[in-house]
Length: 374
Image 1 (cartoon, one colour):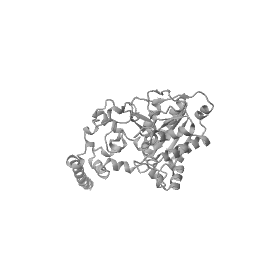
Image 2 (cartoon, helix red, strand yellow):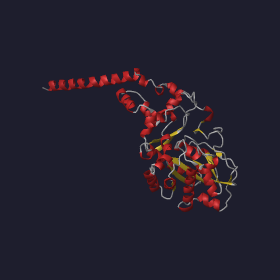
Image 3 (cartoon, one colour):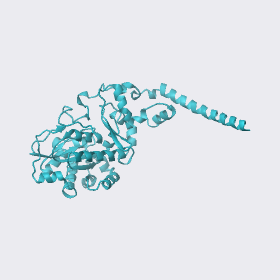
Image 4 (tube, helix red, strand yellow):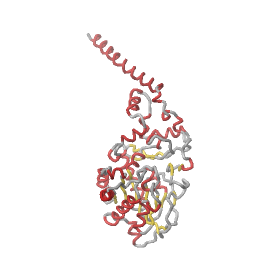
């Protein structure tokens, strides 16, 4: 009787394993020979930097401000019409001011309101991680740090380049991985050969969908469900509320606070969403913003959405430039929101020192570059 039961179990296991093995073999065959998997991202050549803008490569930041040497001062056309520097903005293309002139950026509008120069360290395509590393890299002795955080910066922080995040070749970027609750920095590879580039992308959140290995049935099926990098990025409709972006954002914003504290500088967190979301009355970061303020009482946090939406409602006209950045009027509203916050709800040591006429940094004085590695 016992022997018969054992034989029955063995037979059942064999019958079960046969279709599993056949499915695994079919998945491997599909991956090996089907043209759908003949994509460059599965080949080592995909990680070559043959069409990267190597003249813009920065070994710590990935790339730096447009139209200058990657090892330059990192500022978008310093405005020396002001006698003193009282702050600096860090962020991505919304901070840099894509689609507007240099005197129409958030930093320029804020300078006009404060009557002192706020330097513009924004860089197009930056993740939140790069903005913080740039803050570490460029140090000034006075002024307030304005860290502008836009939705897409959270997604870029989980990417090693734009290859899988947006489906096109680009220079590699540094990225932090949240490992056992602590941030670990992975700098860009040096040199930029394909092998080191591929190794660097092991930590890329968006590459996970493109790794095909045993068990092939699982990975092939996953790839077929999410069959392109652009579609994968669309899955993160609101990175403020989705893993791993949300957890990484909290950790990076805390890192920025520690960096500013180490520099003896005040920091202002400026939350920004896209003109499209303003038009549709969608405050993407609302829940995250409230949770961040709850975790960090006393920290200066600026919510730009109410003022932007009010302006849109009154004008009934989009605040968006053709490629999705803010028009000059939008940047002015953001700057005004910051100005209002630092004069009403934020107690900023840097502003007090400046208003007390202690000797601040002169506008023409260069900033000091340092090693951004923690």
